Length: 472
Image (tube, rainbow, N blue to C red; front, side, top):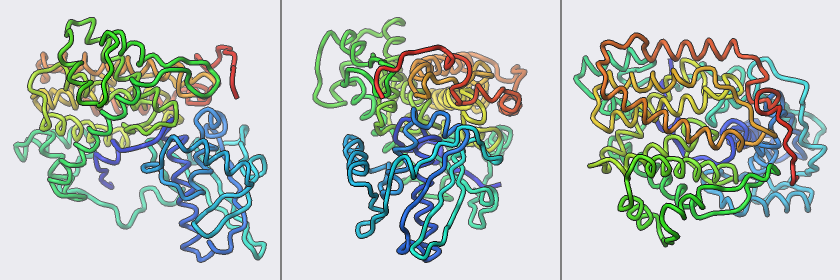
């Protein structure tokens, strides 16, 4: 089985959805690359995009159409100035064309070239995309892609058939394999991860990447607490992180993130205040995510506030939590995420919200336990406890937007992760009756049994509640 890097699970992304925004964006870029490889790119006249299944049903709320236009425009979601996306989209609409390279443009009409196939779902995966290119000689090139969660994109014949697949020195495709390798090598989980990450990068590069992720997390949270107003999309959801932050800091304003964090650290640290800060951290990230902001996908965008909230909690409110602990947290959390990617799913369209908030909470619980000095058995137990109490959670976004109930769920997932870590750290892990592998297997079985209307279709659960859309 192909190994997955921790940094494929925790990485820089753009809101509001890893599967419905980042994935389609990436797929559009991949299709252009496919045309280049086939020697057909310069003959390109137009591209029609068909969105199937969940991508059609909640695509507008997730900005899938915007992502397709940006991907075809040769933009990179990891570097684009997110504040300029609206202007770029408006220019496409006004000009009736998309520049697929610096020197080549194709004809584009929104209603003609982006088709939402609400009644059709492709067999391979609910998040299906079909690109149909028309060339100058009148011929057609068609190719299907599938956004399988967390920004990962595959074709029907590519997944599991990568000839260049990387296999680490000590493969860890299950929690038991992690435990066995740690015991054999006398390593902590984070030390094993660093060893295996050498398949992609040096130890120094691994540490630097983790710290880069940490810096992006801080900047995202800081940006989120400094924005107020109404989130886009029409649900009239008001940003809350800004006002709670303002109240907790008694109206103080800060020019940079380090000064702000210092003020948080120096403030009250009673249970109620800390609990509020955890919510602030989570809300800030997911409000940025809902606004097409740059976030850290971990393992998805809908769940992108959980790991930042728990990591910020540990950094601000636990003693002796520095760079080494941050690195341990991030790489351990990422490694746990790979187990769900390989053994179950991180796609809400496949598994409901247990595959997003549940997985992120499990990852965060493991990362916190490792950083707090927990034994390897306790780390895995914390991950198990967190997921155990998310099993069966449905994905039911109102209006197809990653806002209600998604934003608040990140706060709940973060609190559960902290609780799971505390329980594991105070427990005899040898007495645990359920393993992490057991709960991953159960999560996948639950996903298979779950009614499709609870899998990111906006057709069941809270999504059935009638909410007046005030803005289009």
